Structure formats: structure tokens, C-alpha cells
Picture 1 (tube, one colour):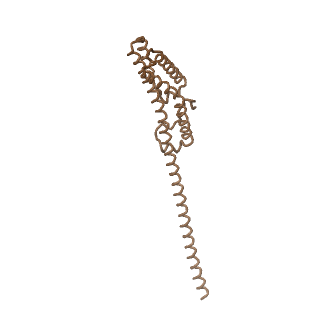
Picture 2 (spheres, helix red, strand yellow):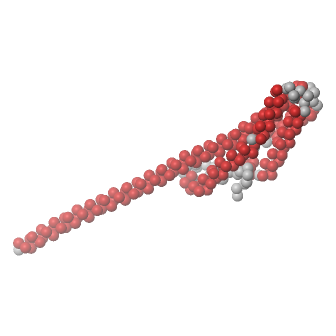
Picture 3 (cartoon, helix red, strand yellow):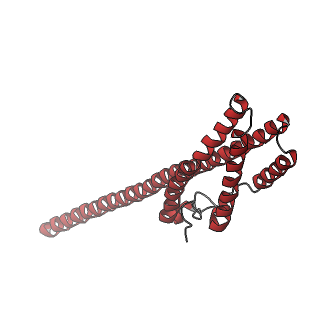
Amino acid sequence: MLVFCTVSIAMKKLNFYLLIGITFFGMVSLRCSKTQNESTVNTNFTKLDSLTDRYLEMRDSMFKAWNIIIMDENKKFKAMHSVVHELMYSGQEDKGELVDLEHRLNELHLTELEPETLENPDQLEEYDFAVNSLVTEVISLGESHSTFSYNQTLQKLIEDIRVRDQRVEMNRANYDSITSAFNQLLINNKSMLKAIDHTDSLTVRPLFGSVPE
């Protein structure tokens, strides 16, 4: 009878220790699972934060690059207008020819470049041809004017036109480089970027050098 009681007590102790062990391992497993889940969530948040910063930074860089293009273009047109006005004031040129030139400058300036223009290579080519023709005509008229050799105003205006016109290719190449990287970011992370930008702006942008399909 004593032996039976001893065995019974031993079994109860064993069951008690087993229960404690199972509970302990269960708590450890639960804690590990919770830690892993928290780690996954934190990793996802960190990745999203990093992607958000990169997306916003690249988008801002793209907008700035485009604004530089437009700023130079506008200042080039302004300088061409000023040359025409300077020639008008001199009274030595055919006023009708200058008025026609002023009209063409105004008309072309109204067709200011937009990012959407790049989707149509023919439209961009027509714009460039028209601008280049006007630049050549204005510079030729200014430099052939009888006062050009000592008229510092004309000289500075012509130089400004020439410098800004020479920067066109560089500005466009810079925009293409930034925009191409931005497009690749969109392609590689579009699903995650939808959580960042809920607008319809998550589409690749056209380039000066090529039009993405």
C-alpha cells in the first residue's frame, strides 16, 4: 500500500512537471512567434519608409530638372523679344518685318513645352525646328545691325540667347537621366508605391531621347 502511494505521488509530480514544461515551451514559442511577426512588420515599415523617401526625392529631382528646361527656354524667348524691341527702337530695320518676327515669337512661346509633348516625337521635332529657326534669325538680325559692334545691350542679349540655346541638349540629357531612374523605380516597386501615392501619377514618363512603350 505504501509503495502504491509513493508511485501515485511520483506520477502526480511527473505530470505536474510535464504540465509546467509544456506551458513554458508554449510561452517561449508564442513569444518567438510574436517577435518574428513584429520583426517582419518593422522590416516592412522600414522598407516602405526608405522607398517613400527615395520616391519623393527622385520625383522632386525630376520636377526640378524639368523646371530648369522651361526656365532656360523662357529666358531665351525673353532675350529674343528684347533683341526685337531693341531693333525696333533703333528705327533702322524694316518695322513690318520686326512686327512679324515678334508675332511669331509670341505664337511659338504660347506652345510652351509640357512633359506630355514628349509623347509625340513629331510635335517635339516641329517645336525644335521652329525655335532653332527663330534663334538663327534673331541672332543674325542682331549681329548684322550697324550698332552691334558698340551696342553692349544687343551684345549681351545675343550672348544670352546663344548660351541658353547651347544648354538645351545638356538640360534635356539631365532630365532624361533622372526620369529614366524614376521610371525604373516605378516599374520595380509599383505595388508598394500605391500605398505612398494614391494618384494616377504612377506611370512611366516619356523622355526626350526615347518614348517608353
